[in-house]
Length: 144
Image: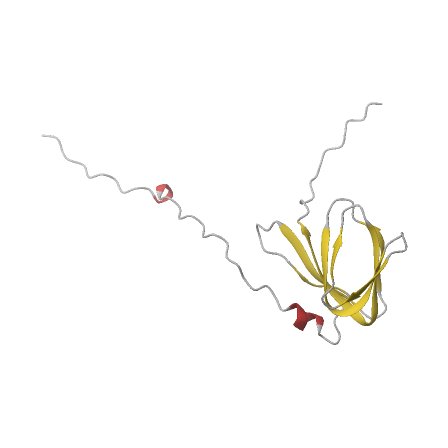
């Protein structure tokens, strides 16, 4: 007579994984509160850091009469939204755009610009497509 064997229990690694929950909208920060700090340092006060994002965003503060020197962004369009203070956006074509709270500017890729804060300082949010991570590439073979 053959002995009956019970079915073995399924191995733990064979249990199907539950699907990850879909991303949910969330409040990231209060840009007005961050920009209103009386002794806010120059530079980025906040950065978008959520995993899986397709965008980069920053809240940047420039103290009174400081600026971001002339530069060109060759690859990315950037939206710039002024959240506090005032200043100006300048281009080599002698274009000067006054900036005040609520100003929304498009900075197209390939454009050259300079930002200067006014006497109250300037705080703004930038948003652009996320840059790909740095990749280490091998050097081409030396053909000498």
